[in-house]
Length: 129
Image (tube, rainbow, N blue to C red; front, top):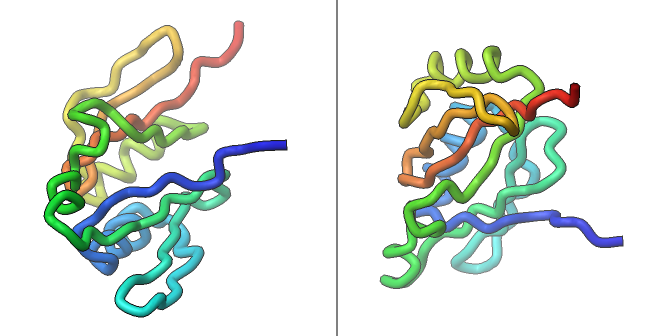
């Protein structure tokens, strides 16, 4: 058996990223383990199946990748079972959406961004007919 367990996200500082993903979005802080001058930090939405590894940039190339890991495209997808609920909660929490919600054949979706410039989709998949 194989499954995707984690995705790495380059961030400027661990605590800034924790403040956003845990404090603003309400995700769970799963691990925050010291490793010398680095930390192993993982977060996930409550009940999430894939972790986000928050990786602090520590050289110029990594700093240059912050917010650009997907080359300007949406690189991360947050799936919800209630788009309206989560969209409203994220707006109330101050999350920036780049567009208004739209219906697509695959579901209801809107692009939002984290404070580091990464584009995300909030998506509620279409229900089978």
